[in-house]
Image 1 (cartoon, rainbow, N blue to C red):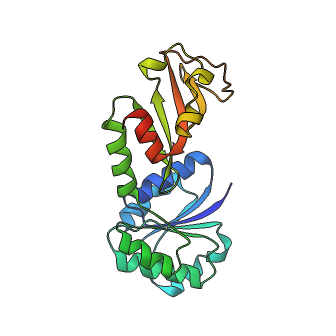
Image 2 (cartoon, one colour; image 1 turned 90 degrees about the vertical axis):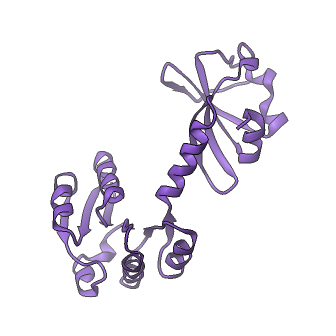
Length: 215
């Protein structure tokens, strides 16, 4: 369990709060909007109304006591940047800030953010990949060039073993697991037979995945 300071309770921030609650973390939520704070209170450990660009207010939160500080402000980049900078200046261990554009990310990283997240950009890419091909069921981007896909077994591979397909040698792609009836099997061997009712979790360079699975 981690102690997390979450600043910004718009739609993105509230969804983060909900997921952190499910995971059992301690969350201090902050927003200048009283209604947002009241709406979030039932799903966080504590919440306060306040201006995160106010140095005195931030200091009162005990910034250094949190394992992670998340800046989820999305409609006011100036406030996001100031908050990020102040958090780092006052002892934040790890600052993760929301960015909407590449230029925002550059400024945030230069001014205290340890990491940035692009919720709209990342979801747009996931949606484009997921729904532009019938056989792609899920997509996780690991970095700029590597990804994990959950894919249906291509028709030509049905009934064949992993060893017969030899996907690693041909495309430098690893089959990490297979799923059947919602159950994950991580024990994939060359003798594992691929059937129509299975899906595969595959890892590799995105270009290789595109070529192999015709994305």
